[in-house]
Image (cartoon, rainbow, N blue to C red):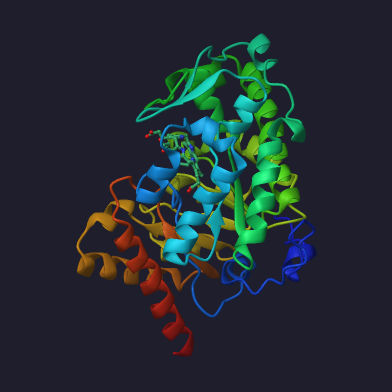
Length: 364
Ligand SMILES: Cc1c2[nH]c(c1CCC(=O)O)Cc1[nH]c(c(CCC(=O)O)c1C)Cc1[nH]c(c(CCC(=O)O)c1C)Cc1[nH]c(c(C)c1CCC(=O)O)C2
């Protein structure tokens, strides 16, 4: 059964450090299923290598070191808010930050992604995943404290990686196309799988809770690689753990749930209880809306189209807005993260177009 949306944030109040800020935010209104004055827009990976100011700020610092430096995290999180006028900020961090914080030897290798020194494959390995203590990530609390002051009315989105996506990195030892070792382990040793995934759910859940306590006003759970699973495997091996990870913040903030290539899993992923369903670019929003009439939808411009010419990009933006009108509420985003080669000017064009077109749309 779908959990009713909690009254705390539905009424515009949140039980966290940002409670004093009134929720006039179009982003939070859309999360609540309302129709705001304009369609809110933000981009996954809006901070990052597409921005020259990001490259300058990050120079000489590894990704994980940057994530542990509150002033740098606050600066990088603010960069796209200043440049684009997006309706939400996403906290600058990475899905492996809480895993590294509990002592797993993981590195983010440029151009590759997370690489784990000693992959997890056994019940004893699962025990290496101890619980996360808020003190392990004091730099997150500190960075969010800096950000809530600077952001004012613009909400901050906290995030975590979902247990399946994180487990895939930990079991494979790094990025994988087929997730073969992970799937083999799930089916040959389900008790080992569930031991690893339930520990990851506790870590992710706590990481989300820390961010909300510090002032994040929504959260997003990234299950980027869930699309690699059949619906039956998703329901058996991933859904219970993602549900557990999201449960801890259910009463305080709206929750967004996102995966790539997950058109076949939309209904199953919605069963986690997340109020907002992320839709990748392969599934039209109108089709997702017919399948999930009670959910706010987030998405889903193909990130590659940001590299198209202005006319094509504008037409594609308008098409996404149009398709999104079928949804209960719509948060404009890309169907996956901003590509590093994207021109920031083009992203600004998208933000302005969404705001202009959707503001006119509400008058019609
Ligand atoms: C799978 C995944 C990871 N990390 C993340 C996911 C889920 C989202 C998705 O599907 O894209 C989540 C993530 N990683 C990062 C953010 C920041 C917030 C944002 O703007 O969205 C978020 C939300 C920063 C980052 N995380 C990373 C970068 C690039 C690091 C750099 O600037 O060198 C950024 C900005 C590194 C990273 N970390 C990861 C990968 C695959 C990479 C890219 C490796 C590369 O191509 O160099 C793991």
